[in-house]
Amino acid sequence: MNAGNTDTSKEQNDFPQGRVQAFVGRRVVCAACRHDTGMLVLGARHWDELMITNTPDEYTEPSWWTQGFIDQRGEFLDRQEAWKVAHSAGQIIRRVGGDTKDGGTLYSENLY
Image 1: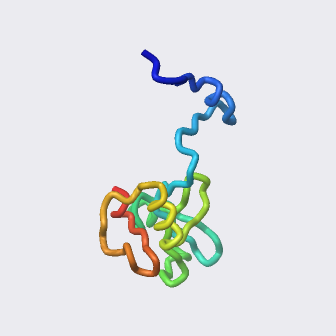
Image 2: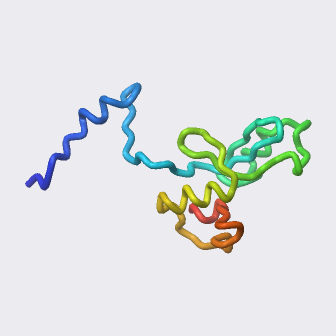
Image 3: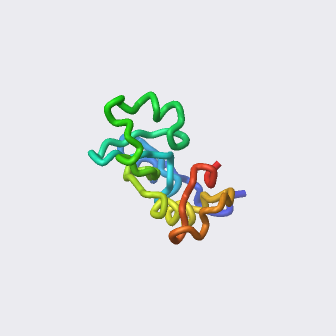
């Protein structure tokens, strides 16, 4: 019983390098911190062990960093931009107090 055309082989082959894209909309994929110089460090959570070990010692001043996230294209989003993207994509699974702050402020804990 086939309720409709479920053959996705054509769509799968249309993506570069054989990649399959199941979700077309924008999504938040991980925490990120952007330095004033434009350097990004990534991790599961802000300033987790991964971020700390990938931050050069000369860039440790906290005021030089903006906390945010990146989307699936690697574009940096501040916490308010990330809230809008994650909310639109249905990624908010927990409420942790940032829902109304500055129009919505995303925290890692909202996502998992």
